[in-house]
Amino acid sequence: MVALASVTALPLCAHDWPEFRGPTGQGLSPAKDVPIRWSTTENVAWKTPIPGGGWSSPVLVNGRLYLTTSKSAEGTKSLALSTLCLDARTGKVIWSTDVFSPEDGSSLHKKNSYASPTPLLSEERLYVHFGHLGTACLDLTGRVLWRQTSLSYPSVHGNGGSPILAGDRLIFSCDGSANPVVVALDKNTGEVRWKTPRNNEAVPRKFSFSTPLIITNAGRLEVISPGSGGTYAYDPVNGSELWRVSTGAGFSVVPRPVFAHGLLFVNTDYDFPKLFAIRPGGDGDVTTTHLAWQTGRGAPSTPSALVVGQELYFVSDAGIATCTDAKTGQVHWNERLGGGFSASPVFADNRVYFQNEEGVGYVLKAGKTFEQLAKNDLGERTLASYAVDDGAIFIRGSQHVFRIGKP
Image (cartoon, rainbow, N blue to C red):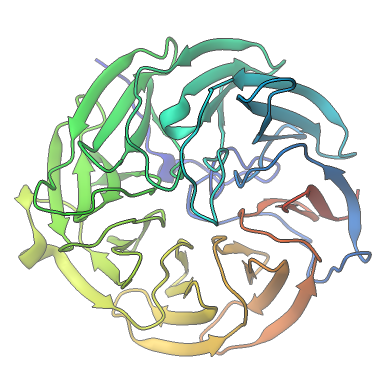
């Protein structure tokens, strides 16, 4: 018997932001005194240059910040895919480990990098993922415990989705241009525990980049993993498909699902995005019975959505922010923020934070009425999502990691 725990059932704990989108994987922070205003000089406690490049979001546990980066290996044509650990109070780099040195990556989308998936930290182990280039586990001194490189697949535009943990399984999608699968590794050894093909043979473009979410639905654990052609639910123990909702020919799916009020909020297509509200559960294809509502107005291609109380917030890649009733989809407000968006929004201290690609952060009061509290220009390109702590926001830019707030 494998012991499993739902990520969504974890208690919120300030000081820890252990995976993509925080302790619940859904962008919710219990932190207090979170900064509202900053600039290139105001309210910046420190900024630390990061060698190479990458868009993995920082994760934070016990006063240490972890992220990945990619740079040219010295004296060769190879890449160096690295993991860094920083002191969250001072910004000092504590250690840096080169994890993989592939001779060639793949062609990249202009908004992507070789180090885009976000690390995951659990029980003194750090899991780093570089898509088709490999997955590894490190201890918290930077020593590599295992590497997994057998899951090469024809990536399109590089890597994207981050891994999740379900008991002793490390789960992620391998959605390349052909034969896409969802995979579970043994978290202790890196060995493949199961590998399940996507049920999307009829979809012409099969590549996607989403991060799964594990939920508890009617007492059953379900791994929700959007991909090309649909949203799919898998048994975390054996990888069997439980149910799916078809989304037609939708492809290049990026946003992570959100689960609230008995509904999953998922996105379906990069070129013509729609946001679906789905009732999870059932067996097989449940498209006609489990789709609660959908909208194409202002739906994002890249940023994940956010549920706070009864409200659902999301921002399109083109900068249109929307607040709806989560249960019905009724629109409360729809406003242009400006700029392009890739980072996923965060809720903290009764505020919703959006960060655009040009380095501008928008702080809104959470609620059914649009109220902008601040507009903050960091002066550096930003595609990664925040990590949040009491009194601090950690933002990864194209060249630095910033601590906003008090040191």
